[in-house]
Length: 288
Image 1 (cartoon, rainbow, N blue to C red):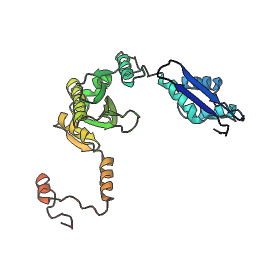
Image 2: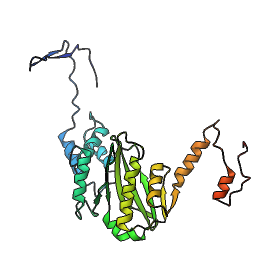
Image 3: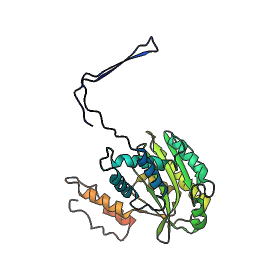
Image 4: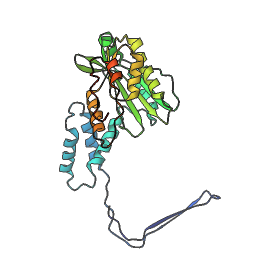
């Protein structure tokens, strides 16, 4: 936006002893009017119309919408980011029930308890024992669990990280069905300076509910290298073999090897041989 040396000033004086505020505005030199950057009403209507059909034509819908707006308004004073914000606000009306996101999520889950309340599948909330300084919300997909629960042998626990502004982490429990991951349940956890182990206890409650209520006979558990996920899976499925995500394992090794002038920890070949008899006791680092 252009600015001008017009000596414009706005003074607001408020007294503790009066309910009246004194406002003084000065403007010494005229200049050209500021351009209106409001988005026209016709564009709002066009966005709403496009959003209505977005469920049927999802591919490139926003880019096509923006191109259509540019054709109609070649000298516009707003940007594609402004259009995306309006699009997101319209979309949020489908799931936003309250300004408080936790209250909104609980209300949404209540609607989802009814078959068809939120779509094809219903949801079933999980009652969690609260942990200090932690907010959590968990639910399972009972339709998927009823159909596949007793036949799933591989269970993975995956999480998002740093994907929103309110520090919520989303954990998903996925069962392997015909080579594909089937969502079984989700848990949202927000950490506000909680004590060590609180998040792990919530994950244990979540996994215990899946195991006990849906007769999961898990032989293999999978996770990335997050100790919270590993410990929770080992605690609730001690009989299962735990495996790390291959991509995360390779990434951890590459990061470690990339650190120069850093001595590795002492490697005890005898301990390794006792645990895995096929390891050669003479296979040790050259520096040892």
